[in-house]
Length: 479
Image (spheres, rainbow, N blue to C red):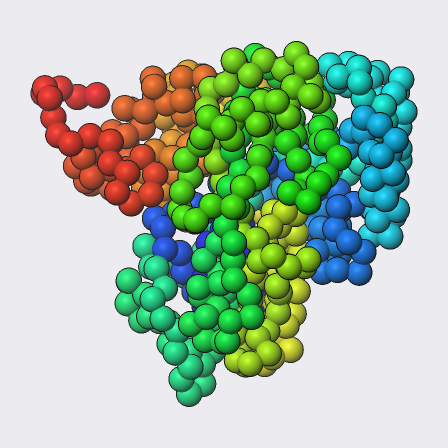
């Protein structure tokens, strides 16, 4: 029997696995898909929020501010791409100014540092491409941008190196209370543990109802985005928000950590939590929202549209902690924005609660607190030459758009939580994230994965299980 089973390998589940790996705890991380970070974690705005949005005295507020600080240090320790670029909430009239003043007051109460209101002249000096209709803005210097999936992957990898077990392709079917703990039945078999933590994202309501009376349910909300080419890099310097509404933080325009520009999201309730399709209506709303903030942003430079599903429990706060009715069962649920920012802080809190519930914490001598990833594009010429000398595969460029080498892809395939799909490689190396979206490098990456896994190429997927790319050979030859 394990000590802890974590259900869901998104950023929350991976953060908890990493936190527990500090100790001699037998942890099992379960994930229903074929890779970590396959849900909301891979499809969101990628913003590390400052912490002025949540209402004071809420868990959301404290987790947001604490998580912001943790992520900055964690990114340095685990070599996760991250930049603290600041954010602006833009107001257009005196009504918006009142909203901004309220956000400033909330932020001060929440402990956000450096917040201030700036007026039109300073605002346009900071962001020359903003609409001239802008009147003022709330400036938050502690906001940042990150690759959310890399935050999850990095923590999962370090946890596994420290002794954590991970079981992919294991959808939870039922949970039964047994003597001394729980039996979790999955599509990959039965697993037992003293404690169970529900970090199942949009499925967290379903998982919760397997054990406890229904006190929350998840309403899936879709948000659609444009991802713009790097040609638009520099159109804005910070994360640009409109004033928030009942629907959320609104349609933003922001740089990404990989020098693209992201625009979105809209917000609408959907019936199918697995529906990641985009609509002409949704994308048009996003376009209009973006142009209201930045009139000359070139939406025609879009290289990809995507949507993500947010887990809205329709409560004002996150659902975090031990169940009131089932001892040993914990929830990390309803983790909507600022969930990405909050995840490491939530993990620390859940770990502390597990300790209080009887989970013994002895320091783990094998805890992995730091890691480094070779990124050829960002090396000096001397470092590139040395990398090629040590491994000639670093001299073969596979992804021209992002300058990703065969060596980096092979390294990714040998990491502690290896990818099994093209998108899995993309999340670890950025191969396929450029202008051609894998049109050039895709076949070579596809071949490398098949060789590594010793599988036929027709069995290698684009992303999740079932997303096959080829059906068979059309001609003989080696790619």
